[in-house]
Amino acid sequence: MRHSLDLYWRLIGVQIRSQLQYRLAFFLDVVGTSLSTILTFATLAFVFQRFGNIAGWTLGEVAFLYGMVEAAFGVMDMLFSGFDPQNFGKQVRLGRMDQLLLRPVDITLQIFGSEFIMRRLGRILQGLLVLGIAIGMVEIHWTATKLIFMPVILVSLVCFFGGLFIIGATITFWTYESIEVVNIFTYGGSEMMSYPMNIYQNWLRQFFTYIIPAIFLVYYPALFLLGKPDPFKMPIFAPFLAPFVGLGVLLVAWLFWNYGLRHYQSTGT
Image (cartoon, rainbow, N blue to C red; front, side, top):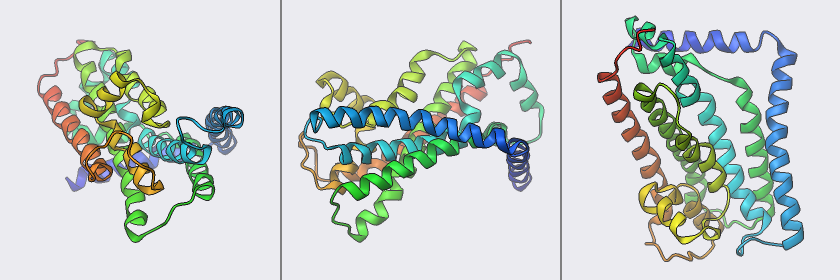
């Protein structure tokens, strides 16, 4: 196990040094990633300037959701890039997965260490910047519980999205290609969770409450932190389900991943 962890950190170190070798290119990459998400939020700000609020949520309150989701998704995308279904499916199809399985090192750690995309720092920093601005725009009555709960929410989001990446990667053992429905729940899910859940139609809200419980990861924690009333009258403990949902999805993903490994058949490439 120690040998596997040493190899993992060596792989990460090699990738970091490789990406920092051309510092100007790396800097422009980070700036480009930041600008794309900043422009998206700027468009949202113009909408609020015209209408004032969305379903009772002010710009600062929506920015609070947006900042948390963007920062967490950026961290996940950097740590779990090896499991990105689109790239992972290509590795399976080309037979590179077979090469990894031949190595006397834990396969999961190898996949974790296979991709570590530093330019995701742009998305992370942009999300944290928006979150910081949002905190300055809204009135939050901070308590010790709320201060401790903030990083718990972010870690829960990372676990949730990371679990979805792992599930999507595992599916490619049988499909050899990533399927678009996975992107609906990862990239599309991050977009959906950046806005208050009460703006969506009932069927969609029910799906992301009882099938994929994304509503408990950022919307309900935000209600608690911002002191907003619950329009859906969920139990009082609903805001505190975030870590259970995040870790639960990651655990299910890990079990599914191990099931996929046991039943993996070489592509013959």
